[in-house]
Amino acid sequence: MLRRFGSKISVKIGILVGIQIVFVISNIAIFAYFESQGALLGNSINVAGKNRFLTYDVLVQTLKYISGFSNVSAVNIAMRNFESNLMVLRGSGNASPAMELEPLPSKYFDMWRGIDFNWQKYKEYIIDNIIKPSQTGAKQIPAKLITELQSMASSLISSSHRLVTALAKEVKTDSQNLTILQILLGSINIAILMSILYLILHMLRPIFSLTKATAEVEKGNLNVSVNHRGNDELATLSESFNSMVYSIKEHIENQNVLTSKLEKAYEELSAADKAKDEFVSMISHELKTPLVPMKLYCQMFIKQSFGSNLNEKQNKAIRIIERNLERLEMLVTDILDCYKLDIGKITLSREDANIDTIIKNTITDLKSIIQDQQISLKLDIKSSGTIFCDPKRIEQVLSNLLKNSFDFVPKFSGKIVIRLEDYIDNENNITSKKKFVVFSIDDNGPGITPGEMNNLFKKFYQVDTGFRRKHGGTGLGLSICRGLVEAHGGRLWYDKNYNAGASFKFIIPRN
Ligand SMILES: Nc1ncnc2c1ncn2[C@@H]1O[C@H](COP(=O)(O)OP(=O)(O)OP(=O)(O)O)[C@@H](O)[C@H]1O
Ligand SMILES: [Mg+2]
Image 1 (cartoon, protein in one colour):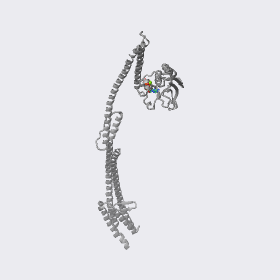
Image 2 (tube, protein in one colour):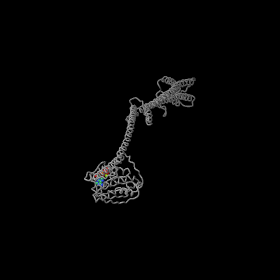
Image 3 (cartoon, rainbow, N blue to C red):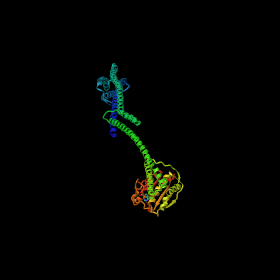
Image 4 (tube, rainbow, N blue to C red):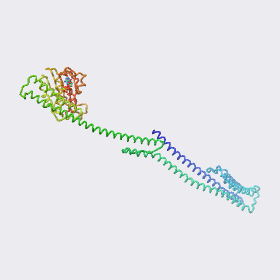
């Protein structure tokens, strides 16, 4: 399209320039022709003017001969000179090596014949009265001869002079005509140039309009259009531009409608989200609140605060109720944690917490279970100091991992190792090296099969083994642990290279 556009404009401009060139060339040709015609006429004037001089020469040579100062051959030479000049004037040719002549224009033939007539008369008179007598040796000089010769020469000069005057008049007229022609052609030339300029400006007008409209669009004003009708490419371009602006406008309007719809939907969603948050918090609160007095009364029954002793059956039943109340309370807490982790709204009370304290607190909480199950719990601590974390949440992670291990290690021969070591992330460059503490909980239980590893961290997922019934739980623990570790900027994974049981690892950044 652009190539076609370029070619059509080039053709139009080419035609205009071609017209101008043809006109200028024809002007030059016309002027050259007139100039050459003027030059030729000027040459004719020179030759015709020479007639007068040559007539004098013939007269002078004749008078010299009569006076005895020269011989008759000088008269002959002068006569031949005149005659050849007269013939040159009439029939064109080379008057001299530097002077070219055109044949005398036909309208001057009569004048030329007048000169020739006078010359023939003059010549005949000289031959009869000068040349012929000189050949016979009789040199008689009639008295009136000189007067006759002078009068005939005068007539001859006059006739030559008339031709010179007529030719000069024509040259003058031609020169005046040439001046008028120059003015006329100059005016036409200016008019053609002005027309070309006008046409070029006319052709470029849509481009100016397009440039202006494009600048407006760039500024963000879409209420513009280019009015250029026609069948050339500029008209097509203008039409395309207009429809493009219309499309953009339509698109922006649609976009605005969509944006306002989205804004409205977002507001509605935010409100729904807020309502959901409030609902979940309210439900978990409402679910937990009745558990508090229920647990309290259970404990009062167990401690026999109501006076009467419970028999063994009643005591067992009340302990089952208490355990299930605790499970229910934990479940509600876990569901709320899961929900908050999912929506990224978990709140962490971070501080520089001592790693030893975290480990000690966790073990103290689980001491009774460790003792009951006679589990060998070893610590392999190669890292110390603090980590920037919410210590309660890290304890929660450790506690879930340990509780899982407690349930899966063999009874009375269970072995669990808690390992702590430093880790430096070498993948980044030296300046941004990040320091971590790696926590590992290894046990000597059945471990996890490769097929189950990917599902471990899914919510409510529990490996289907014989231990499950004994283990209990809801399958939310590992999912919550991973969420909590990641909320600290760390990572939690199952170590598939460990094959003496199960091994869970997580890293927490120092800072
Ligand atoms: N140390 C382990 N050895 C063997 N299997 C394990 C171990 N830890 C976890 N699992 C398997 O992974 C499952 C998911 O554990 P997770 O802690 O997420 O849930 P849970 O312990 O079943 O329930 P809860 O929500 O009370 O923690 C467990 O049910 C168990 O099948
Ligand atoms: Mg668990």
